[in-house]
Image (tube, rainbow over all chains, first blue to last red; front, side):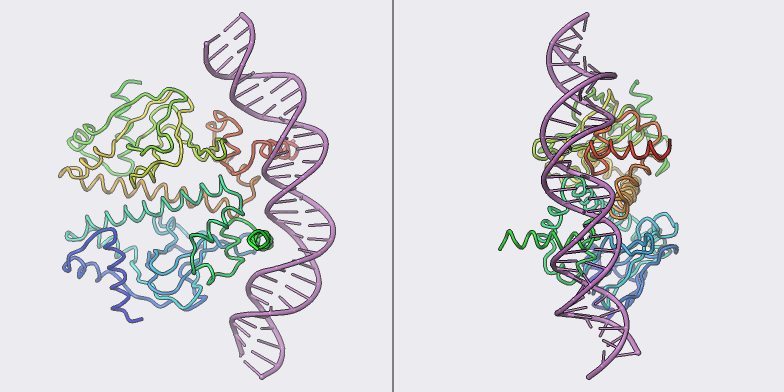
Length: 201
Length: 201
DNA sequence: GAAATTCCTTATCTTTTGTTAACGTTTTGA
DNA sequence: TCAAAACGTTAACAAAAGATAAGGAATTTC
């Protein structure tokens, strides 16, 4: 994918939240970079400050923590989704997790420094602020829903929901990552899958 | 607590994120109302659109869902914390949960209509936008942490963490609400407590 | 293209959690 | 103030999940 297409995708994403004039887009695009991220390469590593926020315009990434030497996958970002280690990015503290490309990907990045510049830009400041608010609100709602699912649903129910909403995307992800995402072990997910098989068979 | 003190508390909270001139505060305070919320009364009810966002200046509330006729408590807000059924408030859709006062409380409220007005106010618009962004980011980080706790920690670890960070507040909350919050049953929490007792004894 | 690794499933056993019910205590509310 | 309701703990049993290991299929890597 060429840079121009990638940037166009970013503009489309941004304008879902905040419309831009061509002049504003011209200004905003100056702050963006387009970066390739090869499969298995890291977007963020635990212990380092995440210095950028990005949009996945091609490919996908997974977020994972390391606990007792084990990798535990907590989240994914696919095409047309933002990615960042938000806490690290927002508070300028070392990240607790890794973000790694699941496949060869292309990311449109906005560095922390450039974001600040964009926010101080007369032309863009207000719209950047608004985009930031709406993006944070969007993920707030997603996270709220996920927390609720941990509290009121069983692992089996969470998986059933995921099957319904996840779409084709799911088949691209290894089962054991999905198990982690659901808060259970891969073995347990395998058993749940068998139970569901039997019922629907 | 009188209205003036309550409003002052709101200003303090707001200024932790965005400083205000007296003139700006004067303008902002016009949009706020101070409301008492008696114990067991509802701030939000499932099925209705949550039309306001508020700050708890006195007392506390709990958030709960009803599933299979059972109440399941998912969250709390105490003094100096915001409260709202965020998804409902932000998307203007019916809330999925109830928010109920745990004790006699005082809330400083900003209605959806007034928030819009404040955002259109020349003097305040930008600062409201920024406050909105920073608040959403704050809760985003809180939620992210909580999701991570469900994925990488056992219920026992989550409870141990809660004991460390929760402070005195915890002793005000019934155990079975805490159990729900941790994603387990009250019986299970009781067992965890006994295990911890034995170890520390 | 072959060896190595990763991945998913399955089995067995252990641990934890859920369910239901009982009991005594505390709190609530009329 | 007194009866009713709510709370926390415990017990007994059932169900689910975790841990570990093994086997075969698929994928990766060189």
